[in-house]
Amino acid sequence: MLEKVFKAYDVRATYPNPLNELVAWRVGYGAARWLTERAQRDGNDHHRMRHIVVGRDMRKSSPVLVAALKQGIRDFGANVIDVGMVDTPMTYFAINHLGCAGGIEVTASHNPAHYNGFKISRVQAKPVGTGSGLEVIRAYAEACDPLNVEPRAGREEQIDLWKQYRDHLLRLLDPAVLDGSCTLRIAIDASNGMAGTMAPKVLRDVAGLEMQEINYDNSTGEFVHEPNPLVEANLETVRAAVIAGKKDFGVCFDGDADRCVVLDEQGATVGCDLLLAALATEALKSAPGAAVVYDLRSSRSVREAIVEAGGVPVQSRVGHVFMKARLAETGAPIGGELSGHFYFADMFNTDSGVRAFLAVASLIANAKKPLSQIIKPFQRYQQSGEINFHNEDKLGAIAAVRAAFPAGEFTELDGLSLDAGSWWCNVRLSNTEPLLRLNLEAKDRATVDRQVAALTPILGVRVEH
Image 1 (cartoon, helix red, strand yellow):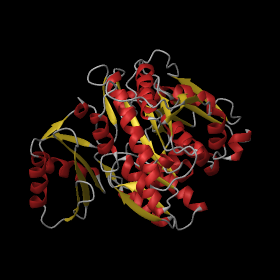
Image 2 (cartoon, rainbow, N blue to C red):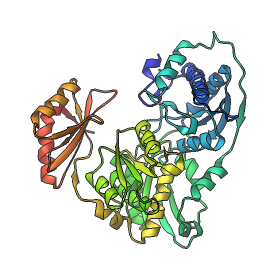
Image 3 (cartoon, rainbow, N blue to C red):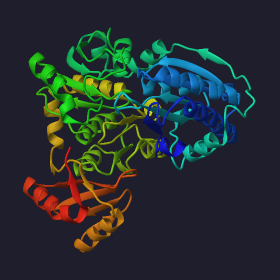
Image 4 (cartoon, rainbow, N blue to C red):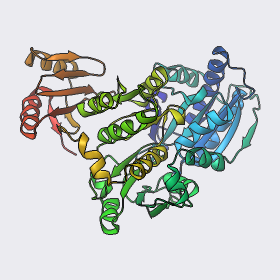
């Protein structure tokens, strides 16, 4: 049963089959065992090192899964701190603010309403994925059964941390926006997800934020549109609001509000890599010489912008487990992925949709010019966007790419990256499906189209969305 729900970076599946209350209990028991063991092994002696934070999203199945999860944690003998219905970054904040052994957010992020899952973090909200503990939690979960364990009666308490979370975040907003001397007009699409709870509690009373609230109602656990801001069709409502309302920018959050996509004042989608280039340039003004972490699929202009701003560009594999580790290793103030995950040192090296929102608002306030003009200097190349190819022999296709371009420069940090001089690309292997993912960039559109066409028969059958 558990092999169907444990993924590379979290636990996620459809409810009630194969993800159900029994699985939730086992995850709670197994996670409590591993988190407390790991905290003890790392020498943490804080009095809350047997406490685990639990938060949840607004899905219909979340309350019953939370109940079973907490029971599993308590039956192991660990203590639960329930922070309620919160965005995933709030759970990360709570782990750090309270000094706990770790935490679990019950969420399926951007997946449809009938999915659910568990995002597990350890001390300081460090990520837990395959290779960093999730496989051990799975083994512990598989070995336990509620009928064959003697409950140890761990305690539970409920804590409301919204004020502390808001105070922490608003310290990071430009003072002119905070006091209203600079007013920004913004359209926010909460995607009927956790941003619909978070944004009113954190942002609604800020003097310089004039917000149009879209899809804030998350009381039913259903979605007006899929809570995935990477799909252009899901941005149409917020785009129309930006254009009609002459907003300074728009933003669309995913289901658990740990990521977002931004639109400029003209309603154009801002590429997350180009937005990172702009945010990094701003961040390096107060952290000269610092590292900036970016995923290796990003435009070459990101690396160039970091160097031009006096920073040190640091490539990372794709995925929050790797990005968070690289931020911690390098002391980078900021990092980002094409998927809309932006990471911040002042958010404990975690990804946060609301922190990214505040960074964009501060960027515009400081620049005193439209977002489209801020982004324009980084629009140096043409990109294919991510293209998926169905292929049952992924490794064979990778080898064929190498053979087809013998003069190219290859690296294998994540999949295969090829630098052919006038163009460059990355081909990644899906962890769970017979898919290859291509991102290709060149100085002109004709070269992009030509090289995508050349690679297509090698990579397989193109999957159209």
